[in-house]
Length: 406
Image (cartoon, rainbow, N blue to C red; front, side):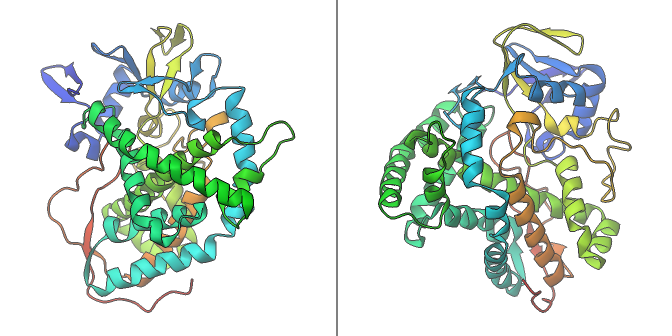
């Protein structure tokens, strides 16, 4: 798919080039100030850049539908791509299995996995923060939550890769290529889930698939297709959200030595620091909606059926809502960012991502007091224009502190 371009004065701006994706915020500020409701020329697609418009698109289900067709074709049949009444029913059933208590109980195991990844990486002296720590951490955690055995991890990783490539349908990889890659593993993934559910019906286990099967609201349990959809959603969102939260937190702290020193001195600041990371560099740049009808928003009329991209990363720096929005402030209060969405579709995995981020950053800052970036070239954005984060971040450390208590 060809990139999208917009004339701005005499300059031609590629909204999805690597330099812009590393730092899209000056462009977002320009567009938010001048064209907050922006029609991408020749595409039939609209982008929303100001906080009020983005929040409206996320919450007004009478005007905006979560069902839509991406530029590459229909959306997957995942819970997040459904409206009422199907969405709240599915969400309610999933919440019965994926409770705050279930997430909180994962803390000791997440700490073990994090430490097992971090210790050998730091011992090397030079390591890739993303490839050796931030990425395998949520991949391993999600695999264990779903009950995927160690013997099946290579198979599982092929699913993670194929689903992640779906995020590139807006730009970059051709939609047909990403679609073929996904189709190639979907059958294998479906066969795995069918077999896993059959086994758990016969002998329930202490894993999420068993809890999903047992979830019952008194009306109708989750079907195998419903669980398969959530399985795929969790593989993608549960991985990318945490990978980018950890990587973006380190990018922010490396850019702000005073904030880094403050958080090192007082680790209790880590949770609120992560909230500012979510505002300042959210893991996902935008989400998708479709106009149910002609919608008046921001002085423009979005026509019925148009694909709409609420740009969360732009809304999170709207000066109408956030004082000094271009300043990374770990003491910001209040911080009503939209990084996890808003309203009926608020991210189900937010608590898990926050927990993984808190543990990972706590261990990293405690055990690597002298991290130094070991690459001179700018970091390469992760594949797909939906997500915001680095593919690789190479660091070196002269010494390793004593392991922190999990």
